[in-house]
Length: 522
Image (cartoon, rainbow, N blue to C red; front, top):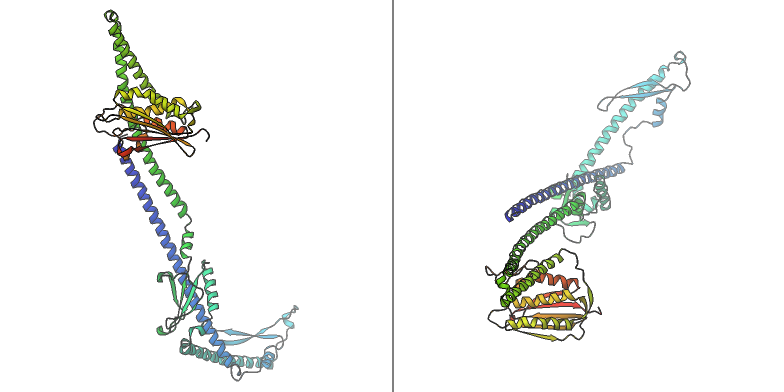
């Protein structure tokens, strides 16, 4: 897949995911706004009902006080004797039935028979005497008159109470008009009835704007938008009105709690985002590895062609009888075949090294070794190759405890790879100087290989251990390679529970590789 196509797919996925996040955020915002508005309306309705209840309480209070003031006199004048009225109504097993009009006034009174519990024929019932009927009519007239007098009196009494409320109620201080404990109970009961069982703090503000009462102490001063305000007695003059202010400290938590899906929704969105980013990273990484593998195959194919063709040509030449008769030419051809065979073997070894990366861990033949002896042996073997280019190799074995438990072949290859890189990346006009050291560090053995070659830029010091990576050199390819040597070195060292890092050499010249391995006692 082309890189442009990957970027196009990534762009489409990013656009779709951004749109999804936007819609989700918009939906959550709408839900929050709707829940907040519903909460506000519920609280306002509760406060209005509380204010109405307080008005009713005050009216009832004035009415009771007015009744008490007039308790010395009877509730209506010229009241008849209740005993007489009762006797007149209940005579000869009869009773009165009062007929009312639609407006509540009395129309007339009927005489209704009160049958006894024993069943008797209608013919056996005696008609009430004429005097009794007259008494009943007189009693009914007296009751109607009494009720009208009582109605007039009570009407006047109510008018008097209303006048007192209008004229004198708003002149009293609010703390005399309202019982704050009862107000708190009203608020709590009304909010619970409307489904809001939340802690709240309320304060009462008098007509002068001064806080008269506050139910609890606030940890922080709330914003004006967070307070709910209601006039306590709406009938008062505007200049005499008192207010109640209510604040809900846990309002935000309550609204968030009503939207239970928000937490899993955000969690799933984050998982999708992380998965999306990780997928893009894997795609680009795999594409880069694929390109490197293709380059490796192309380079390896080209490199294999040269020794194979040289060996083939030498074999054909050896078939010539004239060449076999010349010992010098035969020896030269044999040498060429031997060198090219070694080169071919080296290339095959590179391919085998690459196969190590496909395994979780290489199979080692571990044994106890003296690292000082191993380093000295490898340096001695490499001396001829270094001297061939006019260079020198120095060995400094400072480690007093150098016993390690490793695979001899692989650790030897690690040292050979580092020394071979130092030779390949030497400065053309400067004599090569190599320094190999060993030393101890808190239960560990440290082996360092330092050269004075062309060096590595700081931004590439960590990347040189990646597979197929080669330091960019433009269009110049003086040194052949596949970018596997240092990757192999790091894998072998790490599989031995060690570590390796690259640093800039002393005086910012050349490169220094530092290997750390655990000692055998650890």
